[in-house]
Image 1 (cartoon, rainbow, N blue to C red):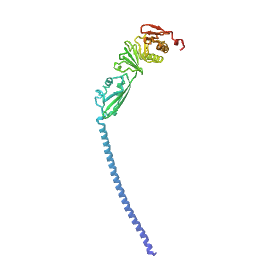
Image 2 (image 1 turned 30 degrees about the vertical axis):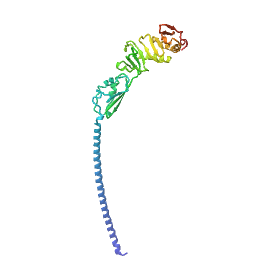
Image 3 (image 1 turned 90 degrees about the horizontal axis):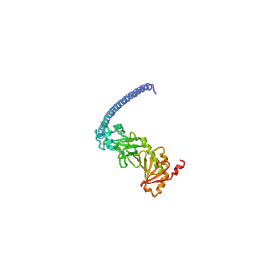
Image 4 (image 1 turned 135 degrees about the horizontal axis):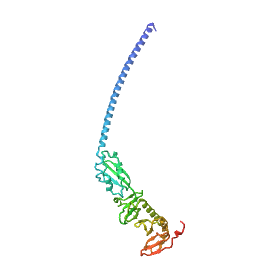
Length: 315
């Protein structure tokens, strides 16, 4: 290699570096231009997304508003004041007439809000004022807007009557509530309800829930020792009580502290009565005496039985 070649080599290297720098600069400018274009596209895309979100948001608000304003969500303004049995439906009532319950709801005002947002506490509060109602369940439906009210009534434990063939004048429920409203009496009786016959009852003075519970205990004791269903308890003379069972009448007399001891003798007396030929002529079994049992015949004759063996045995 000559000395001239050695002199030209640095010059070529420098020119090559400059050329490379120029090319790199051009590439850098090109890349920045591309980046700028991408940023512009990204900004336009973001603006479009924001605009679409804005449009969709208000479109959704409009749809919700339109749905909320559909007629099928709203009760009639006179739904409670003029019930028709379809808009306001009451079910599961056996004792309380529908008109009584509808009348108790007449003062409720219908608010202009969708049915699923409507409060039901007013309905429950008004119906629970009726003493024969135990629980109230309210269901709300739309399209068309309507309400179904399911009532749970208090179960009558005993009914108080003046005559067997007449409707009750009062009844006592299993949760110790006395109901005297005559509108609730038509369906208060059932096969499991104890019937108590009275004469001109004075509920505030003579008849209380506690007294009915006491009579119910007596009736259950008679059923336990007789093995038969008590049809009614005749309390028209409070000092001369009669109990009707399937096979005969039982005279208990005064329901004092010895009444349960006298009732226990039924278990030994009934088998004897069923074996007698005079069974059809028996008017009642008299257990009003402490240790002596009598059979009262239809012809006003009394057959004196021997003292009950049950009284002689230790209880």
